Length: 441
Ligand SMILES: Cc1ncc(COP(=O)(O)O)c(C=O)c1O
Image (tube, rainbow, N blue to C red; front, side, top):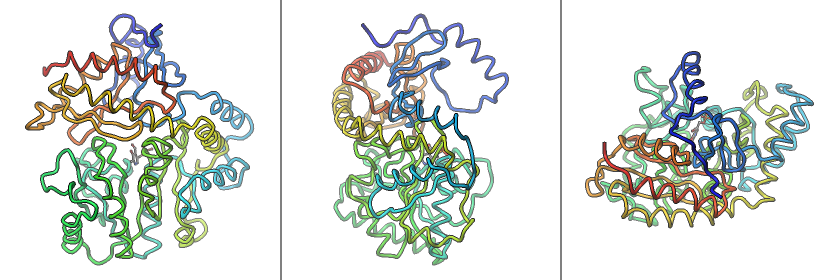
């Protein structure tokens, strides 16, 4: 029996009425999503209010790595919520255990963490730490980067979306290009392992733009919001070396790339990156709002008591989620499943490329892949007009996908890491059919 089941065209009658009510009372300012109102989720399957069943390739937005409503996570959160919901900066048992469990899972040089609530908040905390530790105020960040929507985080980001029409950004960001193997006009990506021409360019950027007060580097291991752009192998390793040779601190934004998403617990693990700070969000709570900044204790020690704090950070309920999720990740070997099923799905998606004249690139690692749509494969002119069609057609056939991309032309393939081969196969068949039928409007 099929896992998915969609009756009639979306939105179904209950979804339609609820979506109208939603837009009446809550401002309709979020991005475009499949026209359905979610009611429940289990593993990779989402059911809407009309009883339609979908396989989810979104994981929210790379959040629910242990699957929707994992019973152990739900039980841990329910138990904690029944005991104590908040105690601000006072200690609670779960917070202490969560910090220990998280640090035990981190790359070994990161021996302390601090809990916050959102990814953007962890970006802000990492930026503060880099500035306070060095006494300098500039940060090197990248075109296409996304580190969150608060003003400081958006100022570090290299996507116009969160900044356009909001006036001047926070000063102090020096921005360089991020190497993109699919669009590589400067030929930087085939120059490994040293990437000499890229790093000569980076030195020029610093020479031309820095006032001499560079504190550190902030970078995503792959650019998520810009379209799941993975730099060439070895480039991140070289970037860490480049930074450390200049006495800069190095922050890796693992808000969306961590917790097994790329087929390793941390994206940093692929090249054993010697990062000084890491920002962590999304899957650390799998839907429960929690984030963290992790760093060497020698970095945290620059702060005085009271300099970093958060109303909700480390509350007992979110801390219970942190503990349960790490246990689930270990017990169910979800990182290994991500690597294995991810490789299988990537092979099958790549094999679909000849069937669709607009599918210009299939890229990714583990269970984070991007499908980039272009008007034709030679010119690579982006085709954002296809994205709504793909989202709607997939949803009507039982598959939930979302979009990203600097040009708004990339579909995310990022199911919960619990996805089985049967679930992968059924959802891949849906995508194969959608790609075959796809036409430019
Ligand atoms: C790499 C990265 N950093 C930071 C953020 C911001 O996280 P949040 O939306 O929880 O503030 C995101 C969110 O998409 C992200 O992808």
